[in-house]
Amino acid sequence: MAWKKMGNKSQVCEIFGISRPTLDRWIELEHTDEFDPKNRKNKGGRPSSIKDLSAFKHFVEQSNFTNIHELVPLFEKTFGYPVAYEVIRRTLKRLSWSSAKKVFVVRKNKQLESEV
Image (cartoon, rainbow, N blue to C red; front, side, top):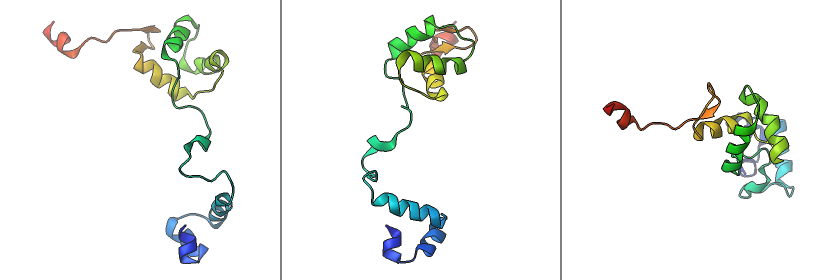
């Protein structure tokens, strides 16, 4: 770490633009089992994607909702793990879901549209 090389915590905080308590917490964390920058399994939080897309598509088709915000608690109850609103929104977009019609639509090829 930089503070070990420099030997001055105040200078390190000034260089990196962090507070002294933040540096002290990082130093404490370094001496625990939780600190392993190469092990990303301990990052915690919600998953960044939905695991089963076909089950999710069926879930959306069968669910009664008016906006995506209502899907978040329904998803957690049905699938048993939490996801963020943005994950659901992004997955719906990837599945070509139209929020205006609440249906899955097939996108036309741009080349075919120009020929018609």
